[in-house]
Length: 429
Image (cartoon, rainbow, N blue to C red; front, side):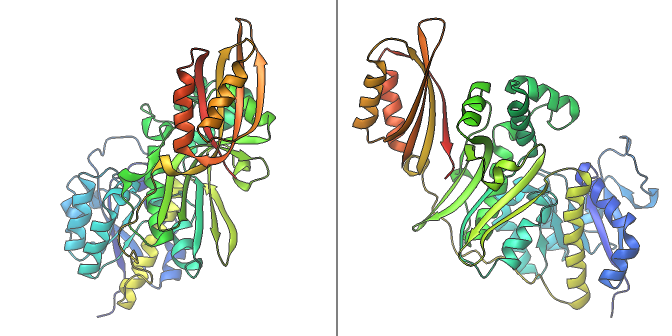
């Protein structure tokens, strides 16, 4: 029997859930025209209906019981915007078992349990879509799964966290410290009261786990991804980077290296003429290199109620069309096996190292000798004196194995002439 509408239930009416609801209701007429029938929100589950919201939700569709959504007879598509892996994962799996397609913006859930969820969807003949989990309004998942799918992808590198990009942008423009800008970001609502997931790179790690699996067609173990945040970036590093023609960004990178994938999250010195160096404030961007497409960059707002709600609502419309035509997603999961992730010690990279040493003859030579003995090739050196008989030295190293650099820095630290190894940052390109 033909459907005369598609019914949507939402789990969680926080920032993203609220944005999704607003997009689906405010644009209801144009959505009906594009899909062919109305797409109507019929049920919303939230644990707190007393919190202030700047939009109204009819009493008739409210509930505090998630089962009214994931098992409800008046729901065809379940939108999950709760976040985390528990209980969100169980709700998603229950929805799938009840024959409902699922749309989620939950990056942690898809990074950690995506394989289980996609396998369950395939077994039950329903869709699971998750564009809103990565990059907010940026359609990067759709681009990788559809527009660029004929390519052999060489690299995916992104600025995937707006909070850290905002902090680094302010540090660069104003010379402020990390702590000062973080406090401002929290006051402005760009950073959570507990900013750990953002500033330690965990949020970006969830997202690159998802993107690398799609780009390279292999399931990625989230725990195997090296992750380093921005808490150790100092104004001095920003100054040196600017002087040398770089911008410092928190980068999430995935590339194929032989039979392995090199997937990691860490700060990087990006050449000023690279497109990613121009991405400022709370914006996100993803740079993709493929054998046929060459270089492509997608840019936009990476978070927020309406940008992410836009991505989630777009997935809802795709699922609605599939229900109307009795089909599934055009691009189901195509991962073939588990990816081998290259250990960070074996990664080949160019590096920036800043250290404070005793300001006396022979120090530079002693340090350079150890670098040479450990197989670390020096590209350039900048030395500056300071007030307390100490000197600050910045080294730029040619591309080489991380293992060798770590070994060299360990030996240098034992010389008795190094007060502090302040920063080690990888250099892009």
